[in-house]
Image (tube, rainbow, N blue to C red; front, top):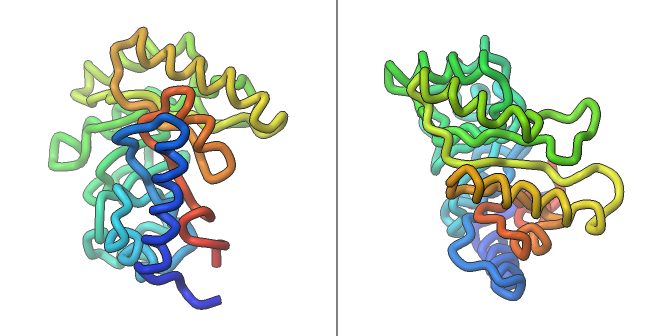
Length: 218
């Protein structure tokens, strides 16, 4: 399959934004999930007007950028180990999947020498075993750790439940939106290609879209 170009992605992005509007969203950031896609697709996504690029794996980021800067704001949306933070600290614009004190501490250390200090706490609001994310009850403690290490918690991120479809996702998304509101946090990252319209209706401010923008992964 040929790599998508900016015009094709722009058309898909227009469709996504229209569906976001129909779901009641306004000013929603659209992050293109570019894992497994080559650097050219990242460039096309930025040229098409996506608000950021979402990558999942440290090793892939390092190989893809080959020491150069990303073509647009790069969000780390996959689980990252504290001992690998240093490898991408200079290119990440937002850490979206933070759920452990050790990772927060390492982000703070790297931020002191120019790395990004902005994070979202990933919440496993569905309580699914084996899925990344802290529990709702751990949010306050992680925010306290972030404050001590000079890390800014801008909001929360969640992934919809694996089972149950949209019926199961709705309560999860509404819970995370409520947790953001109760904590006075402005960013609520939830919703992917299969459920972003529901997420927006539940109060998402940022969606992470892969196949609906870029097509099948290579």
